[in-house]
Image (cartoon, rainbow, N blue to C red; front, side):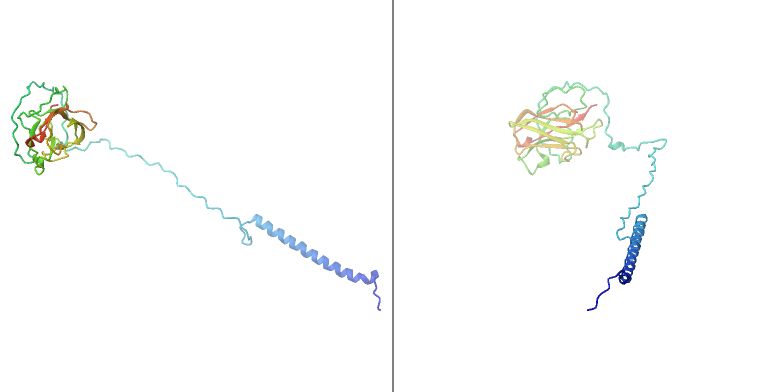
Length: 265
């Protein structure tokens, strides 16, 4: 067998070859480390670099808010003149005319059946049945029309005949013209043992002409004596007249009670 020489002189070339290989590998590792450090440094300085596989999110652009500009308030012209209103639609203002004391004694007269058509019913001067039992309060701007209440046939519901009973009428201003809006009418009291409380407006029906009001009391005539009343009110529910008490009758020819109001101040 051949013997192998393990002397230092024999092993020296092998050692030198191995050292060269290790030195080359060391240099490569150092170069790679340097390159990695350079790349990481670039990423830190320029994080948005296209080589960075994990770039930070792009920050949104700061919004520019508009500059507040003061808006001048509307200025009235030097002289402001209110627009004229139609005198025909104005409600006459009450005057300080003293309310005359009612000295007319209650009288009883024969009720005449009216043959007028709806819309032609005007205040009459004929005293009617069921005069109010209370004395009008001084200072009320509206009073009961002279001669009212008047009992009539239900000319506004002639098709119902005797199967209807109610109360209706109108209110007139200082000039005698009918008031067509702006007032309320309240019906209250007792009828046939039952409480009655209804609220309506002037102008809600045209049966009695412009500005008429009406309340149905039942489907048949019922007799009662001074247990029901009507009263004019303003929009604030304040009274403009006294409570006007009236009678009702069991006759079919008297199943409509006509009550009108006159303005006196």
